[in-house]
Length: 259
Image (cartoon, rainbow, N blue to C red):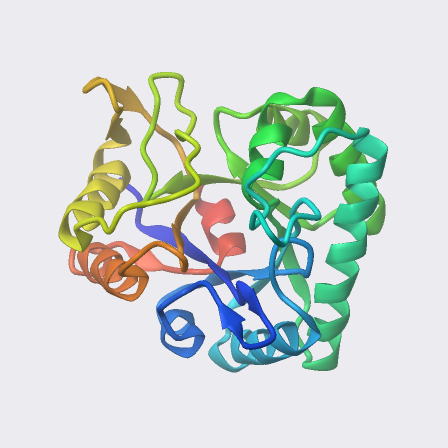
């Protein structure tokens, strides 16, 4: 049973007058302990980054960069074939934007979590994961990497000594291999069912896959997405279910200390 868990959400996913999420960032920010800020390539712009990072500082939420493929039209959920070097340069460029807005508002960069198709590619691509983590280590050896526990990214981070946070996906389905089933469109789920899924994962370390099998799952953070329909109700249901069962929501660094 986990006594403390990080709760993270992807934030600031829009640009200009366009927003993907139906949930206000202010209300989501009050529920979470880590925020993954869209850094401009799949969503986000300087004004949205400034606004949401200011909210993270005000709510005491851990600041994360959420870099994606250069794919505004596809929301970063389409695979782009290029070299690991080019992708890592794109990642560093986006991290720099989030980090500098964080400095502006007096909040340090806590973590990096790739977005969408880039996250899934890194999970199976050792060259990309290694190049990314080696580069991030040079930037900041204490920077947390958020990824799936079943991913190559996790294996590489552990091998290279970069601190890493494994995620449990509240609003995504799991395959028997322990990886999430990637999807571009998500139906409106039942918040109560998602909350019970998260609670069981924390209490028993188990999740049911799309084939009906139960598998072991280990993690330090629970993720839900702001663009999932009903995200605000999902976040509230998760937080309520956990805290009512003696599981505190805390910063990723504190969770690592108890892992």
